[in-house]
Amino acid sequence: MSPEEFRRQGHAAIDWIADYWASLDDLPVRAQVQPGDVRRLLPASAQEDAEPFDAVLGDLDRVVVPGLTHWQHPRFFAYFPANSSPAAILGDLLSSGVGAQGMIWATSPAVTEVEQVVLDWLAEALGLPEAFRSDGPGGGVIQDTASTATFTALLAALHRASGGAARLSGVGDVPWRVYGSTQAHSSLVKAAMMAGLGEDAVRGIATDPVTQTVDVEALRAAIVADVEAGLRPVMVHVAAGSTSTGAMDDIAAVAEVVREWGVWLHVDAAWAGVAAVCPEHRDHLAGVEAADSFVTNPHKWLLTTFDCSTFWVRDRAALTGALSILPEYLRNAATESGEVVDYRDWHPQLGRRFRAIKLWAVLRTYGLSGLREHIRSGVELARHVADLVADDDRFEMVTEPALSLVVFRLRAGDGQTLAAMEAVNASGEAYLSHTTVGGRAAIRLAVGSWRTTRADVDRTWRALQRAAAQV
Image 1: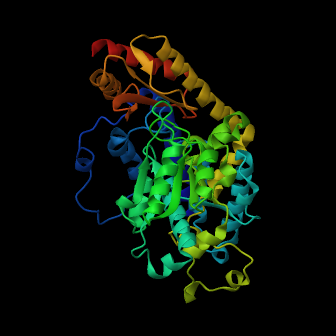
Image 2: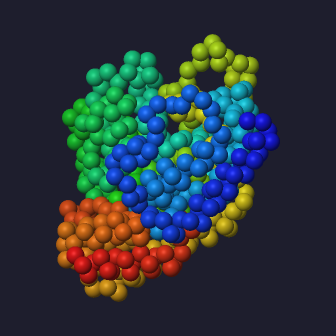
Image 3: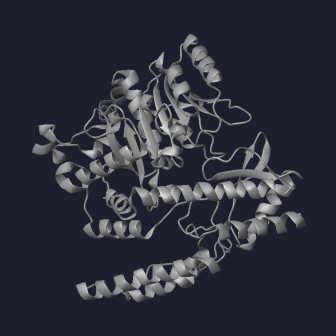
């Protein structure tokens, strides 16, 4: 494309996005296609001759949109939100236009230093400890997802616990053990698998039947039993907002347990951590100053386009010790001076995009006041959902609302609960997800889109009431 053609098509692409957003309210939230429907609309082989970009834009409506589940829809309440706000999209576009590779400081100093500053801003905004700042012993880095952050934390934990032996000779036959509640994210097990420890190395700790938070005494007993059996505790995963119910483990109490054995404490606040931009929503992070690592995802509830997972460590030495490697072709004066950070040593990947620019754009164009307003709106709408549940005798709450997540069910039973949810999802009116709590099915409704209003919540509730009357 010539610069003029690029400019014209760029305007057309932005226009398409704006039109797509404008049309969302009239689209079914969940994709209405069957397996293979989208594939059949595409040619079997790539074409030989070039065609204009207009053709690609045209096929978005014909091929792609009918096969999308619309995560930006105002009535998308399944899973957690994946916000893609205007400012973040433009920031991502700028990042793509710059096309810089930020694997080491020398390859694009601005990529590294903007990221350091933006993560310092966010750490301060969330009330995180000073040790997590880039001018302290630790620092922050943007990962792609919290799953990668958990894996990275485990590698750092193994490095520290093994005295560096793990990176040289592997985990060997050392019986390492990793701990998390039975509500911990599945990425904990995957991290153990990828680190070579295996699924059996992960100990699932029982939770309180009411709050679904980890049973701290059960955790202590499990560690004691493992130590007495000659096993090596290496990391404890704490959920500050579990996926299933939003359960908030007691970070401070868990920290007291792990301190005795020097076990790495990783706090997974992927969804709920960003709520701490509001001072009144920081209670679930009490004790985070004792954590060795902490992750939260602005790409969920903080208006930042996927992917942007912010990860901090208390002591960067364990992290870079586990992952640093310097082949000859990456040697440079800045790295060898020790005065710069090379983010290639902070995660498994070598290559890295300029992710910080979209978070920078969000923090600047919304301001902390705008972000707080967004978070508070989600919490308020969740409270409204809880009130609606309380006002309908057919429904009951399963757990107390956790920030913007509400978990409830039909009193009639599991079959009716799931049937009502599926009826709403199939209708396209809204999209909800489910979980099981205490062996019983429950509906999850997670508020968080910047487009969601009280009217959207009420419309979804009316659809659930109609479905409940028919199951």
